[in-house]
Structure formats: structure tokens, C-alpha cells
Amino acid sequence: MPQQLHIVAAGNTLAPALAELIKLGFSVSGVVASASGESFYRAKRAGLVLDASDTLELLGLATLAERRGADWAPSDSEVEALLDLDGSV
Image (tube, rainbow, N blue to C red):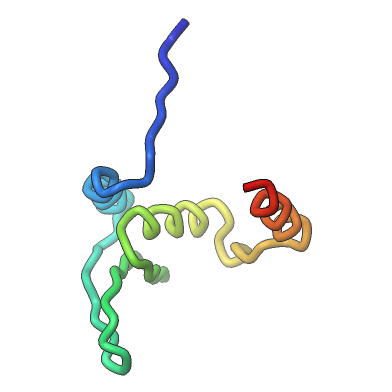
């Protein structure tokens, strides 16, 4: 039986996530919000800007944007599924 791949969201996934964003054609930069002074990461590609607290989150947003486009927002049933999942933890 082949061994199952198990990846945990941790510091060692941030560099590979950045590499994948670059392969997908994004330019990625660190940004400091002028009003709050908070820092975050921004990924840009033609017609698309993504902001997140780390590169792994950016990659997740990039996946949402690529798969769902402008219709990325959740449906009622998707929100319900998330609430059900949160209730099981």
C-alpha cells in the first residue's frame, strides 16, 4: 500500500507556497498598511490582487480565484457546511 502524503500548515510550507505563486504568474510583496501599520503579503497578477497574512493563505486565495473567479463568495449551503464542520471540532 502506498504511503499517504500528509502536509501540515506550518512554517516549512511558506517557501513552497511562494514558489507555486510565482509559477502561477503572481508577483508577491510584503506590504505595510499605512493606517494601521500592520504588515501582510500581496500577490498580483493581471486583473487580480490578493492580500493575506502569509504565502500559504495567498496560495489558497489564488486557488479560489482560479477555480471560482468573480463568483468566489460562498453559497448558503457552503456556509452551512462550514458551520457544521466547525461544530464538530
